[in-house]
Length: 190
Image 1: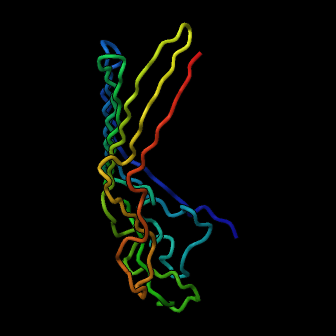
Image 2: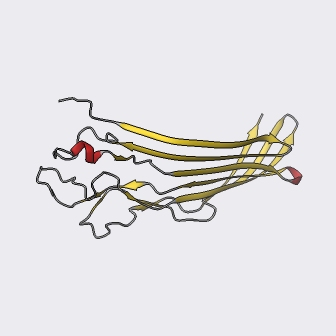
C-alpha cells in the first residue's frame, strides 16, 4: 500500500555579515534560527499501528538545531604568516526515547515514551578550528607550510541517538565527536 501521509516542514531565518578579504583580513559571521519537523525521515513506514501513528511520528527532524552560529576569518600577520579560524556552535539536536518492549501490543518494538518522535534534546555542540600558515614565493611558485588544529579547546561534543528505556545508560550520550586533532602540511601553488 502506498499513500501520501508523509510531510516535512522547515521554518527559519538566516542572517549573515561578510567582510571580503582586503587590507589583509576577512571575516564572515552567520546565524540561523530554525525549526525542522518531519515524519518520513529515514523511514518508509509508520513506526506503530496505532490510529495516531503518523501523527506521533511527526516530530523534530534529526538535524533540527534551533540556533546555529558560525564565524570564520583570515588575518595576515608580519613576515608572510597568516592565521585563520572557524568557530561553530549549534544548539542541541533531538533524540527519541523508546520503551524496551511492545507497549501497545502492535508487534513493533518501537513505541515512543513521549507522544512525538524526537521529543528530547541532547547537548549543545561547538568547536574552534585554527590554522597558522607561512608563505614563501620562489619565482613563479608559492610554497605554503601550515599547521592546523581541529577542536582547539578539546571540547567533548556528545551525540545522542534513539534510546531504549531498558538500557542501563538510558538518557546518556551514546558517542562523542573527535577530540583535538593536529596536522602539519605543505602546499605548492604553481
